[in-house]
Length: 236
Image (tube, rainbow, N blue to C red; front, top):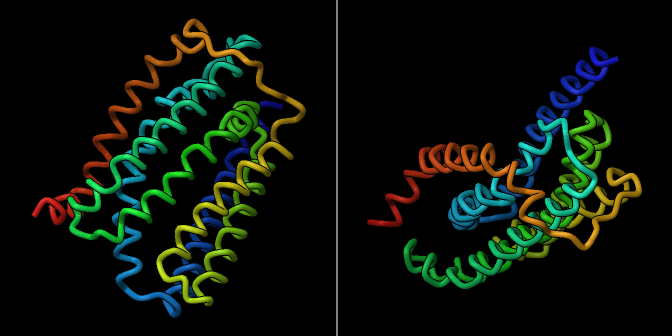
């Protein structure tokens, strides 16, 4: 049984990776005809900022939760509210810092783009626990199908907006629609009737933070390595 579930998990994980790659190529092929190079440049700067903020979503406890075997019935609820709190906090932080970030990169147009894109943190956080619980159960088929469906809907929204001459805002809209659909589909098809209790206790999440903290530190270093070129250009 375990062997079968492991094989299924590998198969669906591979399917997800291939599907994301194909959808990304399709999006570039379609939107490149409708958007200016400057739009992609602005979106790249937005992606760098969101990439750094994403490192701190959930403080890395989601990966620890998937790997942990001995999880109490109360812990998922505390982890859900921790994810929501971190998502809301990161959204607020980017909202407040967006004018400074835009000034750092030398593009004032970044301010509204960052403010809009920041909403994806709290939207994604609302469905994170449902996704993690499905992954923990190695039930990857519905996870992959909901993820690909959300990406397709986001792509459709971005393409429609780009055709309507929304420019770079079409890319932001696509990201928001993807996040919103992903969360909605997670609650419809992954939660399996689970609903979080009104509970956020330090004792419930403390044991996850050790592994999560190390993961955050590692991901922060990797993000700096991937984004160093854009950061150096902004500093200059």
